[in-house]
Each structure stands twice: as structure tokens, then as C-alpha cells.
Image 1 (cartoon, helix red, strand yellow):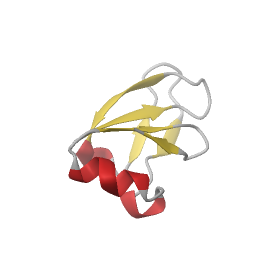
Image 2 (cartoon, helix red, strand yellow):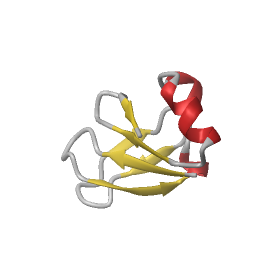
Image 3 (cartoon, helix red, strand yellow):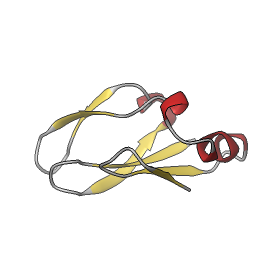
Image 4 (cartoon, one colour):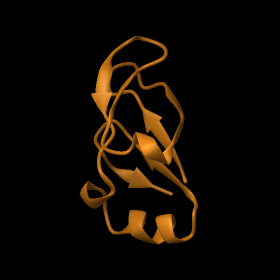
Length: 66
């Protein structure tokens, strides 16, 4: 599974491996450290996407799209 993370500071996004869930990551562009939410913290849609082995997009507000 891949996750598309978006920096809450600069808004830049990139692909992360699924292991990044519930970890802090540093933005590659501006250096801000932020937490990637756990799958349980994301809406129910994340469960469906995970089962389909798709991608999850998490925006700066923690909202999930896929």
C-alpha cells in the first residue's frame, strides 16, 4: 500500500510506503515534521482502499481520499 502525504505547512505531497502510517515524517521540501495518521484515525473509506491495495491521499486536515 502507498500513501500520498501532504505537508500541512507548504502543501507539497509525495508517495510514502504503508509503513509510514502512525509515524512522523519530515517534509522533503520545507523540513516541517508532521505525523501520518493511523488507519483507524482515517474515515471508513481507508478500510475499503486498504483491502483493494490502493492508494490513500491524506490532506493537511487529515482527510482521506482514494
